[in-house]
Image (cartoon, rainbow, N blue to C red; front, side):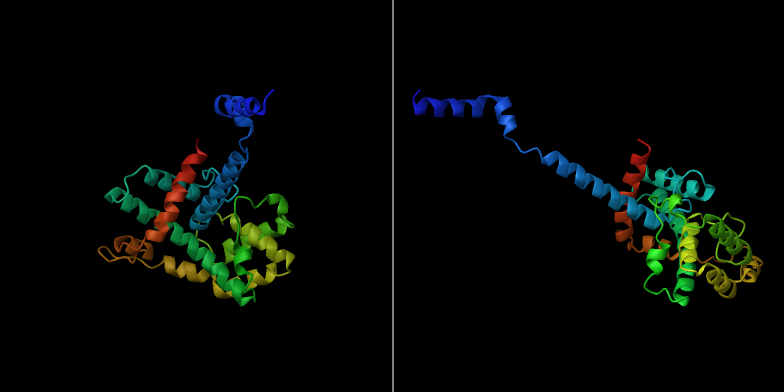
Length: 243
């Protein structure tokens, strides 16, 4: 058969035979896309967890604890509310208030860790995500005992609430470092239970202005751009959890 005829046949197959043409296409694109989507979801999940500091990190539905469920419902409600509306701003204020309380608790832990000498390790010791497994606990019984002591004998947490489960993992890490008991001792000195009790006795008179979270001022001043970016990712991530 002449070469020109063979060349013409090859051209014909390339142009009109979809089977032959598809075999020549690279098949790496779907794999790359799935990998990028996975990392994108992981980044969004991490941002949401860092912003909300879930008290029960293992509960991906955020419905087992009352305080987690309340924050989660606020986030869900805001995701369905028009951005910039009065309702959206009110929800953002409530969400900011919840986050601020959790951040203050984390800041107390950071202060104590730094006073124990963990200046460079504080972030890693305090990092607890939904990927953190109970199976990783080395001494869960002792960690639980110390967590209950902190809740009963210090003002590390909110009064009359179950201590956040996330700090069980932090205490377990300190136990491995042989610093668990020392941490509780220094917590008693820095944040005694009496301090919280005396503050609860303060009565706000009717009509007295109440100082609110700095986060609300940021919303009013339009300085919430960075947080809004995280909220967009967070809202989309939370909605996907229910699909």
